[in-house]
Image 1 (cartoon, helix red, strand yellow):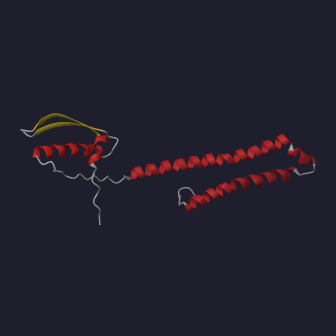
Image 2 (cartoon, rainbow, N blue to C red; image 1 turned 45 degrees about the vertical axis):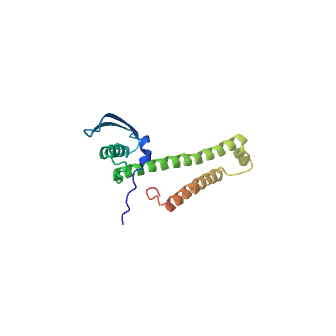
Image 3 (tube, helix red, strand yellow; image 1 turned 90 degrees about the vertical axis):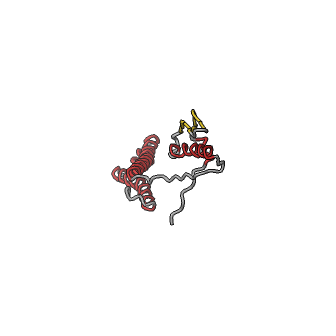
Length: 166
C-alpha cells in the first residue's frame, strides 16, 4: 500500500523567495504576480508559486478558508548519479588507504635510521653476526610488518562487503 506524500508546509513559504504583485484588480478578477524563487530548494520552483495562487483564489472566491493541497514527490535518483557517487566513494577510500599504507614504509625507514644512528648493525657484525641473516631477518620483519595491516584491511573490506576492493 502506497502512503500519501507529505503536504508541502505553507509556513515555510517565506524562506523560498518573494512575490511582486504588480496588478490586483478584484473587480475584474485579474491578478498579475511575479515570483522570485530561491532555487537552493529542489521543490521551490513548483511550490512557491502555489502559495500565491492559493492566496489569489482565496481573495477571488471570497472564501478565507479556501485551500488546495500541494503534494511533492522527488524523482528517483538516476543510475548514472548512483554510479558517480560510487566512484567518488571508491576514490575516497583508495586515497585514505594509500595515506594509511604509506605510513608503514615510513616507520620501517625510521627504524633503519635509528639503527644507523646508534650503529647497532656495526655492533652486531663485530659480535659475529652473519650479514646475510641480518638482512634476511630485517626483510622478513618488514614483510610481516606490512602484511598485518594489509590483511586487516582486506578482512575489514570483506566484512563491510566492499567487493570492488578485496
